[in-house]
Every structure is written in C-alpha cells, then in structure tokens.
Image (cartoon, rainbow, N blue to C red; front, top):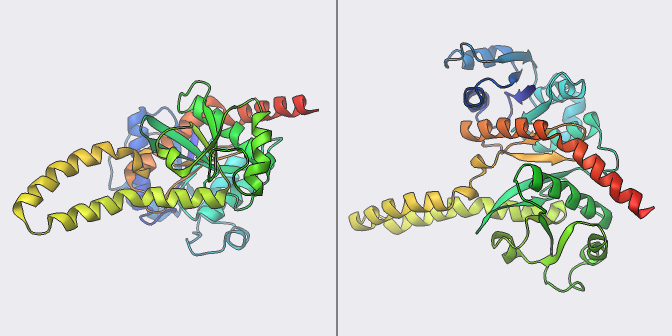
Length: 336
C-alpha cells in the first residue's frame, strides 16, 4: 500500500506534516509506503531533522503550493504542479492508494471530485466528520462539501455515513438521524420534510429527526445534514475546547489556590474532552469519490497528521468506495 501525503499543506508545513508522516510509519511498523509530495528541497531539509533511516518513504517533487486564500477551481487549473494537483493525479493513476492533505480544503475537494470522479450512483460526494458523544463518537455528514443538497443526496449521505460508521467506527447497524429543528416528521425546511419519507424507505436504520442537542447526546450514530448546516455545527464544536481553556485561565488569574485547582481540573478536563480535539479524529474523509482523500485541519499538528495517515490506511483496507457503490446500487435496483 502507498499513501501520499501533501507535505506543503497546512499552516506548519512542511515541519509538522513530515514529522507526523514519519510518526505514522513508525507506529505502523512500516506497513505501507509514505509518499511525501511537495518541494523536494524543503522536504529533504525536514527529513534531515529526524531519524528516518529504515522508514518506508519516498518523495515526489511538486514545485507549487496552493495557498489557503486562493480560489479552489482557479488554483487547481493554474497551478498544475502544486502538491494538491500532483498528489491527486498520483491517486488518479493508482500510483498511490490514498491522499492526505491539510492544505486548501476547497482546492483539495475540487481536485478530488474532478480528477478522481464520483463513485457510480453518487450524485454528490460529501465530507464526513467524527464528533464526540456521551457514549463514544457519531459521524456527521455532510460537514462542508455541499451548501445546497437535494433529498436524494441526503439518502446517499446516509448510506455513505452508515458504511463508514460500521466499517471504521465499528458500529453494528448504525442508527441514522436527520438533523432538524424538531422531532416531528412535519418539522423543518423543504429539504428536511422531503428527505424524511425517502429515508424511511431507504432501508437504513433511520431513527427520525434529531435536534442539535441530540448530537453530543449520541442519539444517532450518523447525523445527516447539508454542508451549510454541518459546517456551522463543526466549527461550533471545534470552538468548545479552546473556549473552556480560555475560561479556565481567566478563572485562575493570579490566585495560587485557583491556579492549583485549575491545574488539577485541567488535566481531568483534557482527558474527558479529548474527543473534541480534531487531532485525535484522523481527519475528515471525502466520501463518494473514486479514491480515499482525507482532509485535514489547516492547523494540523504532527499528532493530527499521524492519525490522518493511519485513518487513510484503514479506509483503504476496508475498500470503503466499493462498499458505497454496492450499497447505492442495491437501493437503486429496489427503486426500479
């Protein structure tokens, strides 16, 4: 197996990207080959800082970088020698089995969709994101790929999310909930109301509508929504841990007793809220394309990169794309 890693993608690239990639190789005991894509001289400079002897990696040069502020579609057309385009092309040509990037998310999604193509039967690829719950983890889909979706797309999201939850999150017969403003089937906007009956007939383990407060309560293993709503939920969830850290520091102030208490509670809180950290989640997969693209946070640390690479390996081993294609085909055949 070969996994490509965008060495130039992210706020701390290539420093943290190379470090995290090497950590993944060490932790996996060289189970796969890591292909570092980016400016060769900068990558080699970072490699020289680590003990990389014996590790199974290679470097593919890409002279350009798509910056975070650049317009996705324009950037992938104009920067054909960028790490995102070169890495995606390696994936398209099946020279690598997966591609991981913490770079420009829009450009990465656009390149993946246009160059890899969609899985047969999938109308809209979608980004799925693991979120913590009181009893483990749920999987929210879509969390940003599609600002506008149709009812049939939400059914597809449910199929893709259920497969991911079962294969990767080890949830047997995962429950699927439609994110809405109320539990009744009549609640919500036109999309929610039209999606509800389709989901009931889909064969998914559909538990009906769930509200925002039900996400962290673990009321559904798979949470369905369009990318507009999902991205708002995701960004809100990401803000919780930093906000709590700031409030703890403010509470402690310069008081020695409060500082000691905050220190003790901070360690406990860190363990309890570990699931809120994107670093441990292994990135966000773009499901519904012919490949395994893993999207990372722009500020990814070495730990986050390591977990993204290992998640990519896991998804390749489970052949998620083929499972999605087979499941959607079965539902389409029933509908005919």
